[in-house]
Amino acid sequence: MTILEKFEKQPGATQFYDISLVDFLAQLGTTATAPPVATWSSDAIVQKQPAAWITPGVLRIWASGGVDKAKYKATMIVTCDNGWVEEHEIVLNVKET
Image 1: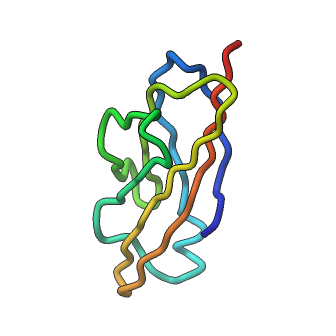
Image 2: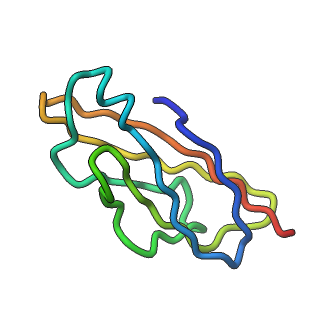
């Protein structure tokens, strides 16, 4: 799995995060065909809406909650038109400021 990006949020914030897979998909010579699936590493993070493509190759995931000074991972599963299934991750640091 590839860690694509690292983000930071406060425990009380509800935010979305846009993750670009454009270059990765171009390297494979493929496109994504199915809705992406995102799973958080802990129930402390609540996904307010399902992961979704907002433009070709850019997906959006939502996060709410989390505990101060904790790190969480979201694993995104992307199905490509060539039949490949790819997994990528982001890291979310929760920090009260």
